[in-house]
Amino acid sequence: MRKRGRLTALACVLAAIGSAGFAAEPSPAPDPERGKAVFAACKGCHQVGADARNGIGPHLDGLFGRKAGSLDGFAYSSAMRRHGTDGLKWDRKSLDTYLSDPQVMIPGTRMSFRGMEDAGARADLIAYLEKITVSTPASDPAPVEEHRAEIGSAAMGIAGDPAYGEYLASECLTCHQQSGRTDGIPSIVGWPREAFIRVIFEYKTNVRRHQVMQLMTANLGNEEIAALAAYFGGLDPQ
Image 1 (cartoon, rainbow, N blue to C red):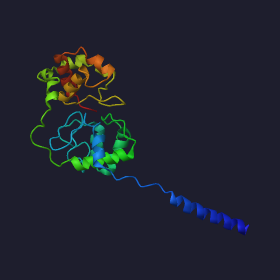
Image 2 (cartoon, one colour):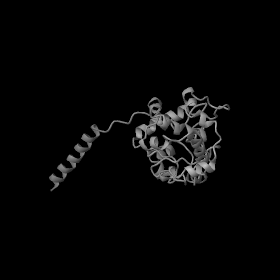
Image 3 (spheres, helix red, strand yellow):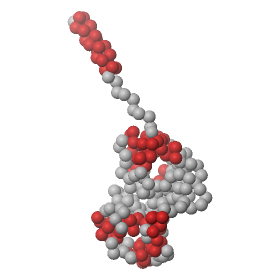
Image 4 (cartoon, rainbow, N blue to C red):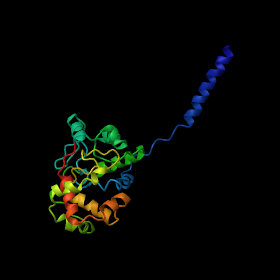
C-alpha cells in the first residue's frame, strides 16, 4: 500500500510538471489599432474625437470618469440615469462589463447593441477609446460630410408637426416601443431630428439595408418624415 501511495504521489507530481509545460499563452495586449476597426460598427450611433457631437447615441468624448447618464443634451433612458445616480462611472472595468451585454448590466437601456462576446475585441475597443477620446469637445458644430448633407436636406429644412407625426407613428410603433425600451429592436425615442431624418433617408436610398424599413419608408414624403422626427424627438425615454 505504501508503494502504491508513493507511485500515486509521483504520478501527480509528473502530471503537474507536464501541465506546467503546456500552460496557455498569455492574451495579447490590447491594441488601439485593432480597436479602431472594432469601433467602425459603433460609428452609426456614436461620435468620438475633438468634434464629436450627440447623435443617435451620446458622443464619447471625456467618457472615462464620466458618470453614466450625465452628458448634457442627450435624452438618456431612466435606467441609465438611475445607474449614474447610484454611482456608476465609466472606466475600463465598467465598460468591459457593459459592452459584453448592455441589457444585462443596465436593464432598460436604449442601447440596442446585443453585446460583444470576444473579450479581446472589447479590450481593443476600450484601448482605442482611451486613446482617441478627449476631455473637451470643440465649441463649434462638427462639420457635416458633404454626402451626408445631401441626404434628407429638404426634410431637415421643415420644422415638422409633432401632432401629424403622432398620427403617422402607429406603423412605427408596431415594432418600436413608445417607452423607448429596445427588447431587440432599436429605440427611436428622443432621437435628434437630423439624425432621425438622415437614417430614414438612408433606408429610402439603400445606404442602410433592411427589407422591412425599406418598405416602410419608401412612400414617406419630406413633410411626413419631418413630422415623425418632431414627434419621436419630443418623446422622453422612460
